[in-house]
Amino acid sequence: MRQRFDLDKIWRRARQGASSVLEAFDRRLPEVVMRCPYSFDEISDGAFDPLGNLRAVLAPKTAQP
Figure 1 (cartoon, rainbow, N blue to C red):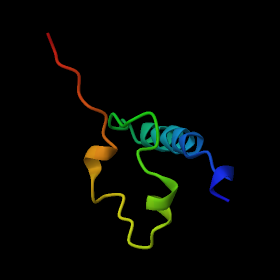
Figure 2 (figure 1 turned 90 degrees about the horizontal axis):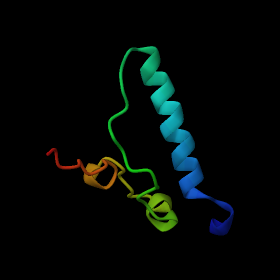
Figure 3 (figure 1 turned 135 degrees about the vertical axis):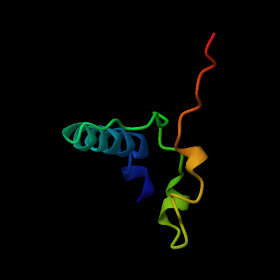
């Protein structure tokens, strides 16, 4: 069953949807990673807490010269 889910595609659509909603309120989506940082097993675990490790979601900031 898990082969039927393209987590990266779902992640991209969710990012785009969140960005569109935030733009409607003059807000910006924080820089988040482009690929889903979670595995199917992590997401399907009943104890999964996506906010437990926000570092996995936030894109690393690039150094400013």
